[in-house]
Image 1 (cartoon, one colour):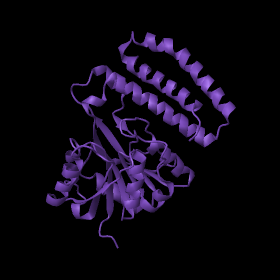
Image 2 (cartoon, one colour):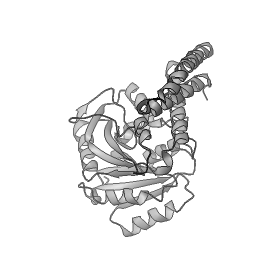
Image 3 (cartoon, helix red, strand yellow):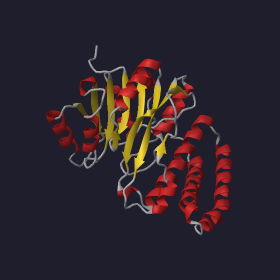
Image 4 (cartoon, helix red, strand yellow):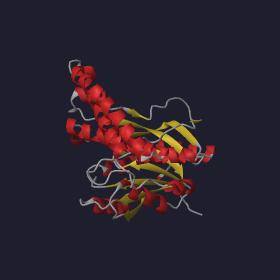
Amino acid sequence: MNKYKITVLICTWNRADVIGRCFDALEKQTLGTDNFEVLIIDNNSTDNTAALVKERAEKGPLHIRYVLEDRQGQSFARNRALDEARTEYAQFLDDDCLARPDCLELMYNALSETGADIVCGKTINIYPDTMPKIIEYGMPYVFPTYTGKRRVMPNALGTTGNMGLKVAFARGIRFSKELGYVGNKKVGGEDTDFCLRARAAGGVFVVEPSSICDHLIQAHRINFPDRWRTSYAYGIMRARIAVKERKMSAPKRLAMFAFLAVTAAIQAPFVLVSFLVPHYALRSFLRFARYCGRAHGFLKPED
């Protein structure tokens, strides 16, 4: 029987500049460092991630296991994490997330006491002081927005920034290789797709709003071009999921593309006008990007 109660799964790529702070937060967990293992899946980093992780494993109090996954892509890394986990329960954290001191303990309790297959924790975005004020209107501060006490929620959606799971169940679902960031290619949504398929498989979802991570947003990720690309990619991701779920024929896809293209065209003038009101400017800008992404994504055939 494994001596650890839970495995912390961290998939990383070229984040040597922030992952050390992630380790610092894990060292302060009320669960106790002897009760959890930290599994690092290095997705073929080209910086000094490997050396940093191995140094922390040798000198720090954390029980760290390093695994190299050379197939580039977040979904490959996440699936490798599931395959390598040795405990009944696991918790995904992002490499730029700082788990609050009771985060792991609350997540473990939620998993072990409720029999849940998926437990959705919460992430709170921490933005740098240099961020332009207007960008705040187009970026969330809290995700998911669940509040209150721990409870079963069949329609919940979690994020791998802070999500607990029963390993055996998650291995049967796995992450879609069609989604997820691949290097700097930003087509995410693999965690949303994972949750949707977990629901369809009868997974039991629990939300635990008290299990919180602070998500460090780096300055280079919050400029207008990057926000546009991310929103556009999000639109493509949602379109791919919808096409896959509905199993659309080619004529239906073309009709959906036409519908979304017309909708995007209609919204375009409103996006331009909205720039006269700064409060709504970026939000409309990003919404239009998502429309464009969905229109493009619905037309693309399935792989």
